[in-house]
Amino acid sequence: MRMRKILPVYVLSCCLAGLVAPTAFADGCPDNEIAAETLKLKKAEASEKAGKLKEAFSSAKTVAWECLGNDAGKRREALMKRVGRTLGDQEEKQGRLKEAFDWYQAAGLEADADRVMLKRANAKSDDTNAVGNAIGHFKHRNNEARVKELRGLASRNVDKWLAAEDKAFAARKDSRDELGKARDWVYYAGSGSGKVFERAEKRGDTLVADDARRSIENAIAYYEFAEKPQKARSVRDRARKLGDEHARKGENKLAVEFYQIAGDSSKAEALEKKSEAEKQKSESARQDKFKQDQQSLEKELGL
Image (cartoon, rainbow, N blue to C red; front, side, top):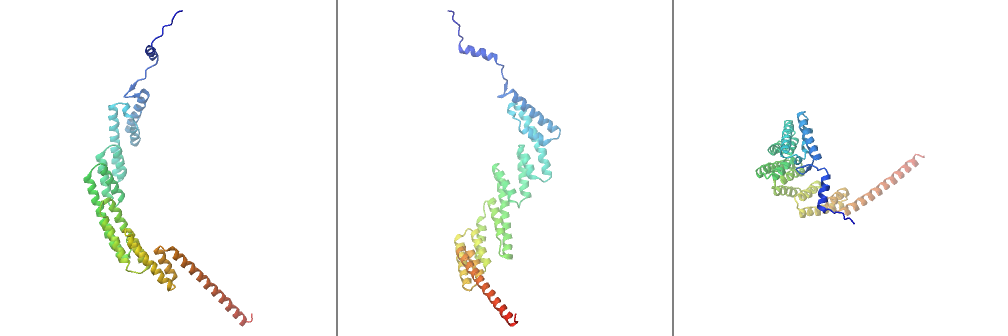
């Protein structure tokens, strides 16, 4: 019997491999991907020449330059910087600084992005979002000098709102909006919360000397703002006692209001029900008397 010669496995592998057409790779990318990325880059460059800058930037941004090599990568980066600078400059000239920053940042123009971020914070120095974003940006950039500068701006805004609060309280005995603004700026200033809370506590101390409903209510609000729960609780106890005093005098409406300020809903509801029952009883008595008077009148008239 004639024996067949069996070829070693590695010989078969070599022979079979020779039958398969090789796929060319450049920098780890197959030919079809290289062709696609090359087309994207050419499209981006054509869009730039045609003045379609946003389209050019968008196309260049999606190019996987790693498949095309360093030269293509440099072309892509240069295009994005050129286009990003032009678009950012257009937005900046129109006063749209946030949009200008976005273009500079996306294009990798860090110096321009820093400059416009600071410019926007100074232009909107009374805007917590603008200043807060700038502080966050420069913290990320490890630029402590800028962070310190912007915290100083925020600190001046704390003082500005405390001055406004002083005028507001003198005028209407309610300055919580102004205190709230001061507290917002404290967060970005990184300091100053103590003087804001002290001011709020001081306002509560002033108002608590007055037994008027509005003063008592506002005193509690100031103490809560100042994070003085014991003082707020003390004023609520006082409001409850004032409610009791008005209830004894028959001034039920005022009593209910003080009970509500005190947070004593059970007393407030009970007194409201009692007042409603007394009102209905009074109304029923009035109607009965009206009917009696009407009947007497009809009798006198012989009707």
